[in-house]
Length: 290
Image (cartoon, rainbow, N blue to C red; front, side):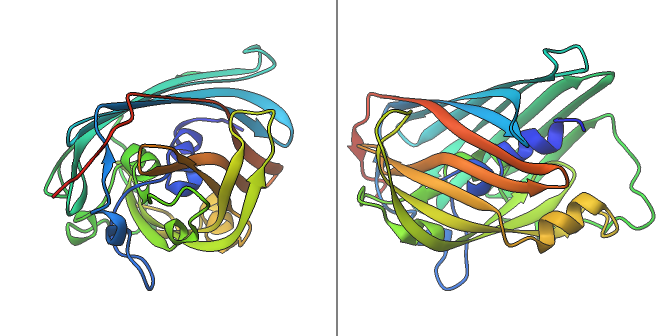
């Protein structure tokens, strides 16, 4: 069990893997539908998440999202270990930059770098008008014979994991707007292209005593592999067939965003759960994108 790139990506997956506030078509509604709603101007959101697997504490993920005018920057740092690092230790950093326009989120650059055990990996991507234009992978691995090929068309209008996870659920309704769950988020992590299909499950009220109290929306999240994956992979098969992935989103007052509060994902050894332990919002002042 190695909480490496896939765990880090899932924390940054789409609203499931924790996120909110991006773009692109969904089922009946599209993530673009809310894209013209005003976001905060010159706002910073800081969030921390604790990650557990089958009730075992794996570590923490810290996120900072800064919006300045139409530009955004999201950075994250994750530290995970087993038996306080005696059995396994993993550390990674990730960053995403881009612009928030009336057409939705437009990523520009994405970086993921991590070291876990003897493995070291780095992913760098550049985007232009919603399309991946440059990709640098270290190490660059040859695809296996049964790997589903990635096409250029599939990379159009796709999002990097951080933009997908933390910039896609927009609403000015802070009472628990289930419409933020009616979206399909297209993600490319540098090696795999997949969709996260969200649908509403319920509204809940989170009691006082934690990182947040107040209304939340619970979304059902469906992982749909598109390309770059191996259909025979046990993890891919489990994630793509389960109906038990949940994403909890909560409104950040004054920002126009719903952000991840909790993500729950079934695994072969128990549930993987990421839960917010703190939120800090500063400089929130709403601005129009028109």
